[in-house]
Amino acid sequence: MISPSIETLRVFLHVFSAAIWVGGQFALAGMVPKLRAVGPEATKAAASGFARVAWPAFIVSFLTGVWSLLAVESTNDLDYQVTFGIKLILVAVAGVSAAVHAASDQTPVKAVTGALGGLSAVAIVFLGVLLSTH
Image (cartoon, rainbow, N blue to C red):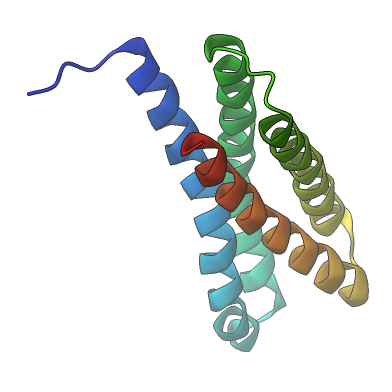
C-alpha cells in the first residue's frame, strides 16, 4: 500500500470539503421542489441544516487552498498564475453569492445568487482539476 503523507491529507481535505460544498448545493437544489410542496418551513430547515455543514466545508476548502498555495512549489508560468487568479476570484464570487443567498428573503435575489454561486462553484472545481494536471 502507498503510504499517505501530509500532502495526501492536505489534498484529501481540500477535495472532500469542496465535494461537500459543491455537491451539497446541487443535492439541495434538487430537493427544493419537493421541500416546497411540504411547506415553506421545510425548505428553510433543509437550508439551515445544509449551512451547518457547508460553511465549515467552505472554510476548510479555503484554508487547505491557502495551505496548498504555501506548500506547492511556486511557478512563474503565466498561464498557471492567470488560471489560479481566476479561481481565486471565483472563490470570492461563490462565497459572497452564498452569503447573500442565505441572507436574502427576496426570491429574485435568491434565484440569481443561487445560480451564480452554483455555477462559480462548478467552475472552481474545474479550474482546480486543471491546475492539478498542469
